[in-house]
Length: 158
Image (cartoon, rainbow, N blue to C red; front, side, top):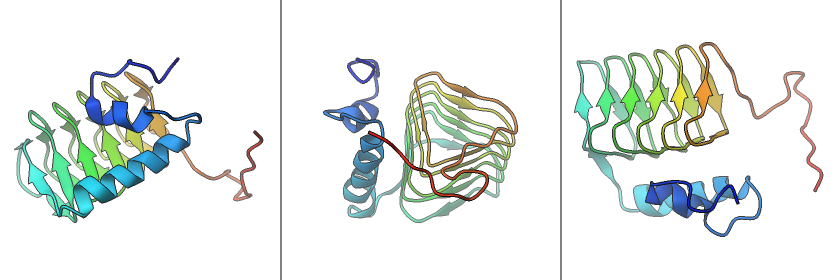
């Protein structure tokens, strides 16, 4: 139910198509970035640089209306949707896909994550190996992690 027709963004819709478990979305994202961004050697910025000192590394696609502020780093492969705000000092690391109308806050870092339409990450946050739902909010200083904080393995039961 959650993955059916709730996004207006075709890229995000394709990531959720025919999945049975949420972690399958990451596999679809990895395949999308490899096939559509890396293999086609895409380095396309349709957004606006709002100042100097923006760094682009690797392959990336950035949608129309996106604003990238000074000191931001975009390290691909990444796909960034339309009308996204990437605030000063933000670091968008490989494996990241954002939908439309998202915000990546001041000095925040996003790695290997799917950020669905309208989601906002406040200042000084780390979002790693995560999936944020449509219009989700991550507060300032929040850390998401793919490991237990005691460094032990995570076990999933089906």
